[in-house]
Image (tube, rainbow, N blue to C red; front, side, top):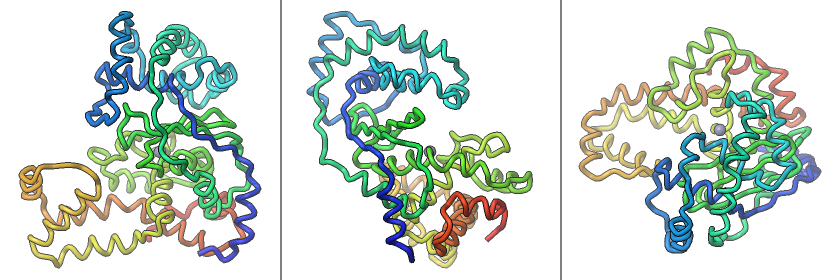
Length: 357
Ligand SMILES: [Zn+2]
């Protein structure tokens, strides 16, 4: 796919980004707290025993965690990465985009920080060492991403990665963007989170340069099923809110280009369901459920499948992929050439995704 692989590799190597796998007990303490408050629903903590001491200490010392109920987990999560790190805390407070997105002020950050800091530190003292899985080659991942997008300037110098928090589920990843450094937390079984979060830091502002119009926005909003799908939390697409677009750009790269999967083939496969009989259709759905990692009992599955209308399923599955299909075509054409980086390509074809493919 890359005609000019040597040139691209050089670009990737030129980026001097420091990537570090770290342990952060303050963060684990925060996850523990919110898990205890019932905000998370993790029932498969494999390492539960080692947290017995922590549990006992909290009871013995009567540590009151109720104040955390007043605050949004995400903000406390950010703060946990900044405890006793003035530099990070200032970067967080100076990130106007981040604060604006949460509708909070610098003063609010200061206020919350002063209220929760001591308790987090107190609990963190009893957080046991979490065994780290083998080192993951994040440099290799970054290089692969860069070979595809050929980023001209990456403003990030530092990436810290926190792996495998026992109080977070496989799907839960997060990223805090502190300007020239980012902190990503993810599960080892879901390392694609790394690519995903890193790409947000680079692609969002480029995607802001894409042209949208009311027609395009209406079509996409009508096709993406905001009610049920996992795009729901990003809200409907609008001139002011491009979150769904960021997501779909990143997912299309991570799910297809990075893995060498062919979206067009998958859409064909969906269309072909028309010709299969009911039994085969059920098998197909069962496999889809399996792939998604969701667990249903045999009865639940049977019952759900009785209700699925084949024609409707085909139609909605294809609609759901409409935006990704357009982005896929855009990536495909981009990857066929080698003289432009991704930003230049977006700027040259800002109206591309408005076309139907
Ligand atoms: Zn995202």
